[in-house]
Image 1 (cartoon, one colour):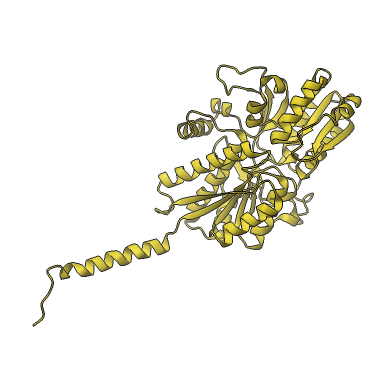
Image 2 (cartoon, rainbow, N blue to C red):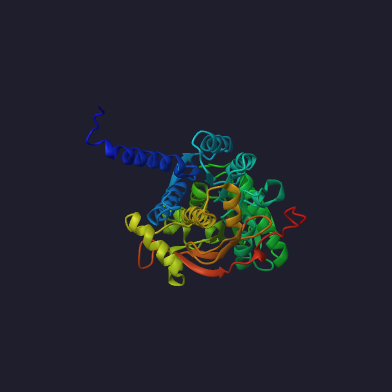
Length: 404
């Protein structure tokens, strides 16, 4: 005689539920996005804002249901603004942590080292820092996308607004790829408009004392001094140049005028400085997308507005996850194809990736730092000009080495 447990009739249901749960767990691991950025070093403030903005994009994706319930996860790593460290972190994110995609690289040098790792392993990478080299054919791959502006775009927009025929122009340049590319871009604009380049002084990345360089720049007697540096380098150099007294003799210009540097440097140091950016919170006045983005960021960050370089990380991660949803997959080739076809407006207006180099075509703003904050503490920039999205700011595909 067989004795049946009173619970035996539930056993098949329990087993089925357990198997279904196990299968779901096996089939639906999180969508992992690696974010290597320089949390330590002179670009730390900008990197920190990039993390906060990337987190917001991931949260919005998950809150909206993810990919049929599959959630995204952000894996943040400190690349210490070092190309070797950036390559190591990217490799670990891919091979050890199982990252499906990589976003990041807050330097021309680190993004190239990250790209070298990702394209060899056929992992989709979206760069979020300015670089001309990453657009060139020798760095290209079907998996390399560039969400940031590049030095050519920035120097064209800012240079054509500022430089006039007969102006004398000098450069204080960070001695690495970013600085060199900005100098090249402004030099091209100067030649086109008839301005005169009177000299360049280069400084090491992470310099804290600019006194050896300033007398040489003063002796060049320029009308415009362009600071081709970034982050803490930019903030310290502009303040020390102002303290040295040469701001009264020449106009200060910088290709990228960041919100974080301006807030850290203060109104007096940055008063009247003109520069470029891809975003300022004031864009909410003409863009519903910017208004919604600002509100979402404020809600998650104690009322603060997003910064320019931070917003770039939001757009990169958000557009990537839009492409994932459109593809209905995390398979690299499918997502890359979806991203190439994407016409997106994530936070400020229309953008798209140009076919040959997968560079995001977008608006460029020229702004000037106000002498003091306006109606609110973060009202620090006056928008002088908005250059609409256009491929005319970019080097041609042929110039970049693409033959097709």
